Image (cartoon, rainbow, N blue to C red; front, side, top):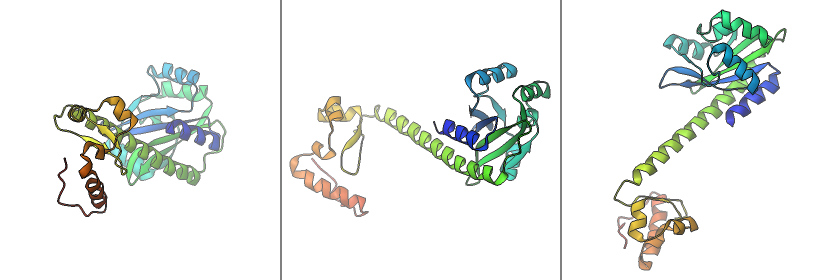
Length: 238
């Protein structure tokens, strides 16, 4: 949703023919088309010309190309051939430019903390005045931060899911709880050891409920001390 929001907002603000967001895949050194403002019919038309789907299409990013993007940041680009770093020949690119009445392209590197996140491409109408450089770069800077944050959240979510999958294989009890002591995750071993069911967990369980009543107050106090960087050495409970 973040990609569609960025693309459509930029298109409406600058009144251009189209906007594309490309995401840099660092592990493969590739720039991948993530989202476009084109409607389904136009996306299909471009895909037919390219003989491959536009969204998901990738181009290789060499070290020199990477350096050029992160150094220049903003560029006026004259053709699809140049835009694709030479991968799309003019015999294919030029008819597309005429078909969509495109007069120019603006390429903006999305950089956050000196790291390439992706690129944003604005395609202007024929005879449309070229985009304001400073304004476009300002919006691109905000977009780079938003995209990098989204990627970090997705990475965290993937790591969390892998952690939980591995936890289910362990014979030891593994759990997660919030600051109020509510259990947010328990593995299979915990269910088997304490005798609670999944429905019990969904209804809500506190970590202190796993302890005998005599130890619960001490456990709550020790949790608070741990949060205040003042842990108690007596951490054993029944």
